[in-house]
Image 1 (cartoon, rainbow, N blue to C red):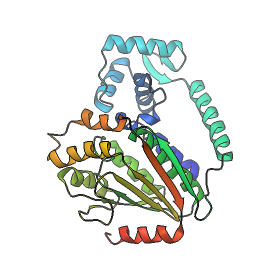
Image 2: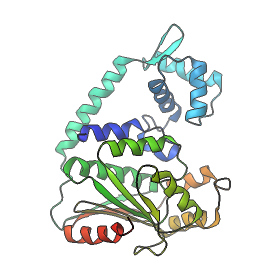
Image 3: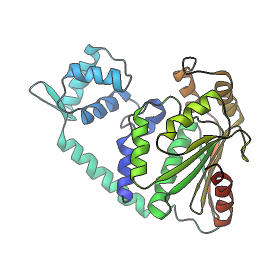
Image 4: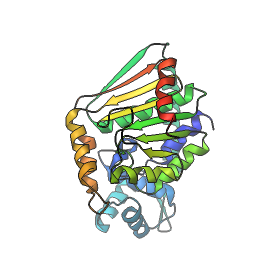
Length: 292
């Protein structure tokens, strides 16, 4: 699969809970994005069917009268069309999005963030962990376009990315694997929640919990991709909030999904660092490779 294909993989799976809101078409009005997503997946659906899809697939709670009002606005805006009582996306509107996306990608490809020179370092600043996730994925897609390497080694102190998402994420991982991406996950603790997170990945990619790993056991994120290293150390306050969840919660029945996701939007001073150093990347990769 070429680099256009990997972008399509990421775009296809924007329908995670709020942890994935960076992919929403309209984050200010997330119901609009949820409706577009569901009508794209289930075209020619009635409003009653759409209402059920929103409830069961997106966990969106909306009254039927409110849904009618929003759908009416989207029909008036020519985002949706209604034929014989069923809803579909307006293909003219979809075509405009394709044109806009194509133009944006062409412009972004002329903005040369990468490759870095050997020894060069690039630093990104952010105000929330959700922002860090968006930047992190942007960097990974940029490197995917650039490199022939298709194997990533990942270390996280805890399985924070893997909790609170729905079963469709497994489909996302399968699409990545089909695209030729091979990921290896190491989590630096062996709590009940870390084991649950590792199990969710293990259906597709190798994932282990490793108490005593040679990296920080709290607040640390590391990816090694070819000659590149990506690193983020969480602010101490954020690391403590995550530690509370992972240390105290023993089962998913005790897990408060909404409270957990609140941590991702907490304000703080975040720094994501990317650097290119073949020798150091191989050293770090070797420390992770021994777990597989």
